[in-house]
Amino acid sequence: MNAKPRVQSPVTLPTDRPADCPFDPPAGLGALREEQPLVPMRYPDGHVGWLATGWSTVRAILADPRFSSRYELLHYPLPGGPEGSLPPAPTGDMTGMDAPGHTRYRRLLAGKFTVRRMNALTERLEEITAGHLDAMERRGGPLDLVEAFAQPVPALMICELLGVPYADREVFQRHTAALMDQDSSAEEMQAAMAGLQEYIQALVPAKRAEPTDDLLSDLTASDLTDEELTGLGSFLLGAGLDTTANMLAHGAFALLSNPDQLAALRTDPGLADRAVEELMRYLTVAHTTVRSALEDVDVDGLLIRAGETVTLSLQAANRDPERFPAPDALDLHRRATGQLGFGHGIHQCLGQQLARVEMRVAFPALFARFPSLRLAVPPGEVPLRHRSNIYGVHRLPVTWDER
Image: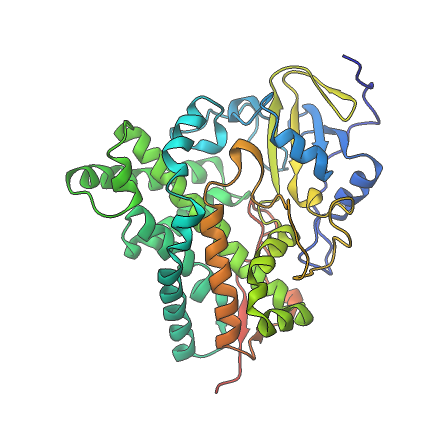
């Protein structure tokens, strides 16, 4: 294998974001990408692996089956994370699986998350969105947009899709937040996962006994065991709650902070599709993922040896000027084709079409209903989710002029 020798001393993963812009990745990522899009990296547990920051490099690794996403093969890249070897993925957690297990689950689910099926949900999403905007208008500002809008809209949608009573949504939001928070202890994370699974475990036999028109009921007709249904249901519920909620909240924050782009969206609602892709690129709330080499692999002329972990900075890749001109600008007219906010390859987000429909409906409706919507606190006082696998805001205080 004609690979170059290792280059430079191992770096540590930059995690400090610029204080003056809550939407930009850590500045050190851009500097590393400009120097070389793949560099040796020292992990918090002492492992020396790699960090990929360039768009083409990250995309290539995500698409390469010689790289595994099995948790037990990975080293955790972020400070304060789990120490030592990670446990294997829980049953149903597709993120931490390779083929053929991943393929089996994916085939069962792919037909239920098609563009056509998700577009068919538009009318129901419009009803859900309008109902929460009505409630906001009745309550009046100021209020927290996360609590009043960004969390409940996708929560109601995923609960309906799976057949989970919406009244139980707060249980899932609490457990999901604990799973995504890097400050959660191992005990807190285990308790959160157990809480999700216990609830779904009780729901599965009820769906088998009396199926209704929902995804979980459909899956009871497959060859999945109750344990697999429980795990898969918990995985889908958690995945459908947190990521889209943070895109809605952080996306609204970004638009309110870029009034020229918000004006463009208000003037031309037809920009909604491009706006969704551009916000996914610009914000990249699911900012980092990890793979492990199953064999020696030559990437960009560098030798990644079997067993070495590669951290893929999706946020750095989505700001790569070689792929996206003027990448640090939010430009809703941009065709952000190829943005990696939903990942790439076999693990590309299964629910990406649902997330697109939710954002395509929610953003224009929010700003049309409240033309004077604005932050109720200075931007620097918006509490950010700095230490989370899913970036965003804890709260987004907003207000508007009463009509």
